[in-house]
Amino acid sequence: MNWGQENGNSSKNFIEGEKETLRKMITLYCRKQHHGAEVPCAGCRDLFSYACKRLDLCKFGAGKPSCKKCPVHCYKPGQRKEVKKIMRYAGPRMIIYHPLEAIRHIIKNKKYPL
View 1: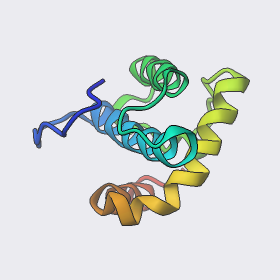
View 2 (view 1 turned 30 degrees about the vertical axis):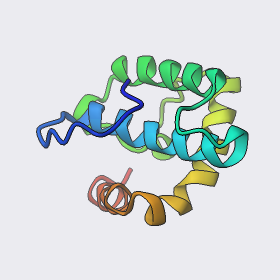
View 3 (view 1 turned 120 degrees about the horizontal axis):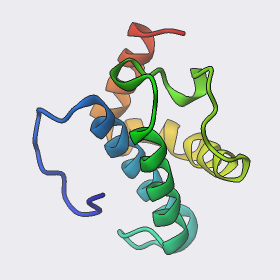
């Protein structure tokens, strides 16, 4: 759960990659919608921590579809609503702020359609 610079490790496993994408989306959302700081607020950090725990427990592992397409909704309703709101905001902006992550996400969704 590094909120600092990326470590540049190209051998990140799939779930860690998902966490990194989520971290970037939450950071972007919080910076633009909450308080403008580079480090997310306590509420956004808590949501990220919750999401990481859910990813660690994902039964699909490396074959995990995007959460939007997943047949199993593992988030509690409140957290799911928050993550959807964040993804709706940050998703389209990822191509500007994190273009490689956005392209990877698009390719992954084309490669593993559910």
